[in-house]
Structure formats: structure tokens, C-alpha cells
Length: 243
Image (tube, rainbow, N blue to C red):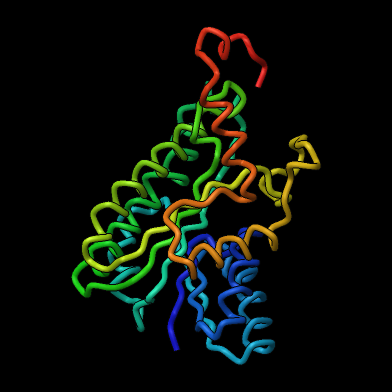
């Protein structure tokens, strides 16, 4: 049986995606800070699908622990999913340096630090898959969430370069660009209901993208069109819009 590691396994999308991999017989390694919450998910998946599920403590912000986290994994996964994320409060991050760094390090530098470990390992063995969950917020900076968007833009660029590098070595890298999802992260944030997907819906799309060896997917797919339009707006007009 293959093994799938999910980083940020406490998120709603990560939990839904764990179900998709479990259905297909993958053993799981669920990593995150809230081990108690992740443990409940692990117990449920083991009972329902008869797979092995390991719960691991991981803080993406503790960079010095990342090499040991990787080295202690046994077995090493064939698939790694980067699902950790932090939206933050834009108004706070504009004025609080620690809040700014927390958003950037959670969504970008912390994840990059971890994925570099797996990228090098997969490259050396000539196989493996990396799934990075970024965001459409990284497609163009908007005043409402540009700190978060900047971090996701960096992550999207990282995944693009990583894919180009590793494709020559038989390693798959999937970039996921979700729009609005009905999750804990967006609690208190008003989103248009017709454009807000459920975690289970997004998880199925991600798994199908993985199985189909896609390079980039927007979830749901209509976000590809929406963001194409948003990116096409001239800057002189865009700066006047309240998006």
C-alpha cells in the first residue's frame, strides 16, 4: 500500500482529502499542531477504511524541526500534500510585523522549507508526487487580502518552478488554486454563495487532478475563467475597484 502525508491535516479541506486517499487504499500520515483533533480523524478513517493512519505533531513555523521531521518519517510517503494555511486579518497584518510574518511563514516559507526535504528525496529516487494547495488570491493582489495573496503568489511560483525541475525526474507536482471554500478559515468572511464550494467537493477535484497527473487545477474550474478576467483588468482601472 502507498503512503500519503498530509501537512496541515487539521484543515477542513485536508480532512476531506484524507477521506479521498483513504477510499483508494492509501495509508495516511496526518501532520499538524492539533494532534488531538487530528487523532479523531485518524481513528475514524482507520475504522471506516481499514488503513493505517499515523498522527504526527508538526509546526510549519518551527523551521529547525523540519529536517528531523522528515528524517524520522518511516515509511517515507509516496505522496505529500501541503494543506497548511492561514488567512489572517488584513488590517492587522498591515500594521503588526509578527502577524505579517506569521501569515507569510505559514503559507509560504514554512511550507517551502518542508517541501524542499521531500523534493530532494523524490528527485533522488526518481518518483513521488507533491500536491500544493495555494489560492486564487495569489493570482493578483487585492487590497482586502494582499498579505495572504502575496504569500500564496510566492507558493504558486515555487510550485511552478519545482514542477519544471522535478518533471525531468519522474516526480509529479500539482498546483491547486481554490477559490472560496466553506471552511473554518472563512468563518466571519462574507463570500458569494454561488461561488463558495464545500470542502468535500474541492477534495474530490484535487484527488482527480492527482490521479490524472494534472499540473494546475482551479477548484472549482470556473475560477480559472474568473481569475483570467481579473488578471486582464488594466491596472489604471483595477486600482479604482473595490475588490
